[in-house]
Image (cartoon, one colour):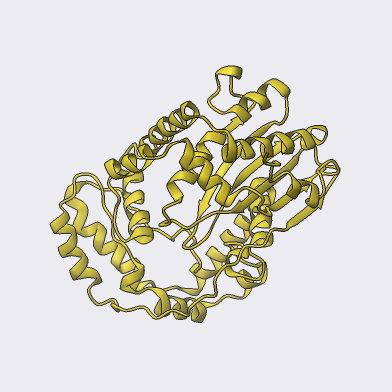
Length: 355
């Protein structure tokens, strides 16, 4: 099933304004006039956003990565869609979409801060109680992963932008947490970082000492029943081969030789980052809504910490071997990428000979 980040409406308010805020949200969702002038104005905004996205090379590479990894499926399409759709969509299309999809099971009303839970429930019943309680959407075919590549060579660009990923798992899969720890083990780095040998990631140490890239970022993107686990890098043309080699070497290390001390450090860093992301009422509110849509409940922090603490080096080796070792990756590359090894060579770097 398709699992994209949900659309959201967010209001920051004082406690006494809660009834008015819920009323405004309910009115937006259920009674929007969708005037022609407003549609035309928003059409222009979205078209400008699409132009901005096209200049963001990281966004472009990740669009290509999804297009090649999930060929001919819903996840292979861009979030904004083709320009032709934006130019032709009309009020009737919007009304049909809202009528079809704005149903109770697809909506979460979340709040954080000085809010009474019982009062919020009463307000939700009053303002959203007339929404249909059932949703019968079209069943989407599974988004099957394909090991493949997209290369867009442009030697006029100063830097190469490359993403490589394997298929991972969905939000609720038990292997999600080990893959999050593995993602933290690889980490991220750019040239503004100091530290060299004191950096938490071995790949970051090598990138810093060997001048392998301008930056890299490990990612673990989860959807409903699939995901992408991989690395995005920005390199000089002459260092692409070395950066790809050391990336895959670190991936194989996760499968074969990661140590308990490395895993312990990554677990502590992951828990710290989780807490930092919940600094304030707004991110907490967003986290509640996201978890309710993904898991149908909010997972308490102590439960998440316990699941992270239960992971050891053997868990990382077993899970990474399951999803990384000898798997055909998806690759997207843009820029001066002549030195990027061919696909078969990269695929052969996804395993070490075991003796």
